[in-house]
Length: 186
Figure 1: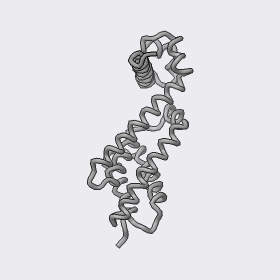
Figure 2 (figure 1 turned 180 degrees about the vertical axis):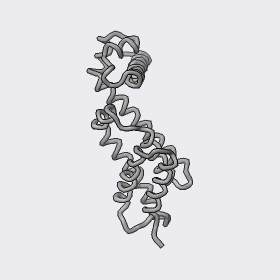
Figure 3 (figure 1 turned 60 degrees about the vertical axis):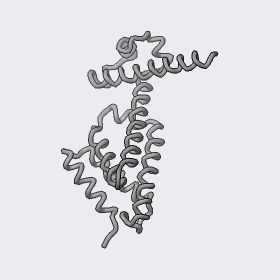
Figure 4 (figure 1 turned 180 degrees about the horizontal axis):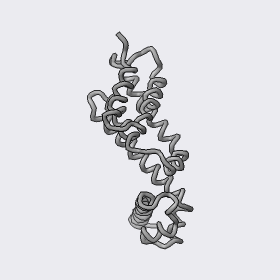
C-alpha cells in the first residue's frame, strides 16, 4: 500500500476514533452512564453500528479509551507545568491538586479508574514527582530524611483529598500544607 494512502487511512481511523470518544463523553455528560448505548453513540458519531464495533467492542471500551486520553492529557499538562515553573515541585503539586479537585468521583470514575492504563499513568506521575522531590533535596528545598519515592507518594496521596475540597482556596491550603510537610526542618 502506498505510504500516502496508509497515512490517509490512519488519519481517518484516528478521526473516527476521536469522534466516537468525544460523542460518548458528551452522551455520558448529558444522559448519564446508563443512558448510553452503542446505537446511540453510532447515531451521534454519524457512523454505522457495524463500523463502530470495528473500533470498540462495547461502551466500556470507549469509556476506557476516553479516560486513557484524559490521563495522557493530564500527564502532558503536568510535564508542561514542570518545564515552565521556577520552582516546579509546588507548581506541579498545585496543578495535580486542581486536576483532583475538578474530578468528582462517581460511577464513571469507579469504572474507568480500574483500567490497566491507570497503573501506567500512576507510575509516570509517581516518577515525575519523585524526580522533582530529588531535585528539591539536591537544592536544599526539600527534606532529605525521607527517601524521595516515599515523599512523592505522600504528596500524591495527600493531594487526593482535593477531590473533596469545597473551594479552590481549600485546595491551595492543602497544597501549602503538603509543601510544608516536605520542606526541610529548621
